[in-house]
Length: 385
Image 1: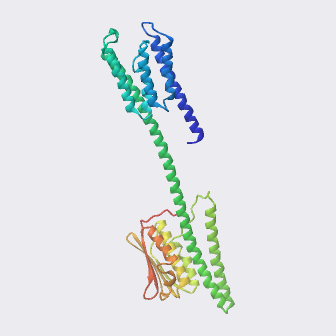
Image 2: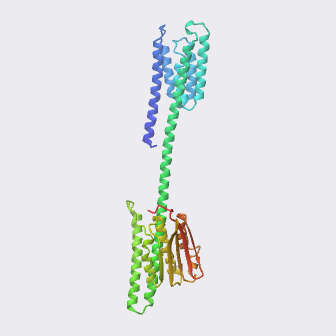
């Protein structure tokens, strides 16, 4: 709650206390003025004012206000002032005590007043004061109404406070969820940037080596063209990622690459001197599955270009029921596993992608090279944009 709102709430509470005090004093004064015997006096009106004024302290000292009100009623009748009832002067105190979370004390106070009034009327010294069902039930009903109203006001106030608390907690939870989504999105972009930059720079490194060793100017020029193309692609990807990170107003998601976009990856590998046999026998995959499969193929090709003395790569993507089976194998004699084995960042990144979709990924040496096998559930849709 802001300071201004709190100030408004405090002013409203004080005005409510003043209004209650005035109402109680005026009602008692009207009852005094209507005394059939005409026994009005300034002392009676001062007592009415006192019963009202004490209510200005009801929020800070509710039990003390109730006790003083009860004792004041006893004192009022002791000096033989006009009758005003036993419960009526204490209505405000009973209401306040119940509102301040002490309904049982209010009930005890009401019981004391009604009991004393009943004993007094049963005394029989004044015929007009004789106990009857009407007056008894009237005072019981008046006391019960005051206590019930105070309890209802308290419960309503607490319900509003709980509603405000729930609203604040909900807002905090939504903010936390938004931060978590933002963190996850940045992690996804970091993984994608790592995969793309790593792949293109690996291709560029290989062609730079070819250019350095080539004796034919045409071969050197072709190799340098490949280096330029690979580094340009890496630069474009870096600029695109930085633009997304800087532009908070961007609402359109970046295009999602999938298995249908793997041909440029295969072309780059072929340009590096590898034979690539690819069988992509799936289409219309869920976006998250398609993107994860693309990144796994990209990272696997990067690892082969970086670490394996391979001449051939086989890529297979097929659907087995509701599971995408993805396999990338090379004939590098397993020499790539030393850098990309179970503890390597590349393998970990691919495994994380698979596990986020509820799938699995296994990578390791085979009899003829290195194998990456991934199984991705086709129902494993994850938010990717």
